[in-house]
Length: 471
Image (cartoon, rainbow, N blue to C red; front, top):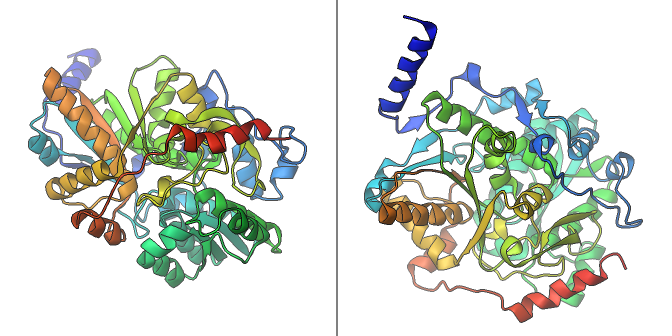
């Protein structure tokens, strides 16, 4: 039998054998490099701008805020593969590979011919995908000889992950937690403190940025934009300290590409090609990390996929925002990024998906969306929790509210396949668990949860201010 004939038989076996409920890559097949999707993008994301000069920011200028190695990763849009440092890879091996799960029970409940897979990133001690970048950023801070880092967190997943990573490398960590999440999710706050982090509800009176925001928006429940301003100010005023970010920036999407790399490798082993790939979208770290290797194949003309970014109807930066340069933070301290944005002054409602309450979207995801390479849609909060309940009752895992945005659209796509009698393959990212989100689940179960969708007039207040950016 020829080699070609043997390979054909192997391919047939892959296509006909039953797919396991959970697929794990063997350790020797774990990715040893992160993938930078910008290297394959024809239209590169626009450069970050220095808020003082409104010129493309330099490595030296960016290094005043971020770690040196992370600056290089942020600015490099031509190198495709960045080797994962041994220290980070060895840490990854404590909880990676993350399982790729075939959602057989959800498929049965939906009576759909679609095949549904999800990449589960909540199977680690921090409970979410955020640890993938947190451990990398903490490593680079330690390598540079820094003593501490500051950051913001929405629902608390990023703050939890960074607190754990800093404890591992012996770094001090100060977290500014969006005020409504600080109050809604006290247990995640306490996990951060247990790992050794200082946690401050944002906006606060401890920074100049916080005081200005409170003066302009009295009684505000905060936003990620507010918390970013406070964290950056604290970092710039603290010796041997840098700011680290859990989403939006391209360095974070680079680290999170480990999600998509593992998912693609696991699917390839069984000859499975997804038709639709879905991720929740707040700042872009999850959806960007999940789709990157698949998007690279699409950009190189090797394969084709549909990509869907799912955002909350209460904070619709892709679907109702404007593609423009805007400040990454409410206090206008950070560099400006060209992205889909609702305006840095936009104050989202106190929804129960705190990790998605950001006014803008990753420049990489924004460019891909503007090039019509990905789709975007919104879902209301109550629909999200209905999907989360169905998923929990069928697949057994209680999902994070953020992840449940992707679950909701995956269910919708599976129902579409049933109605059209199409056996498509759906892949979505399950970013983390929702066991610290019981206040939110309690409100849903008690019928006390509602939906909020901002009006065009409300969005116009912050969007109109974009015309004044840089002036």
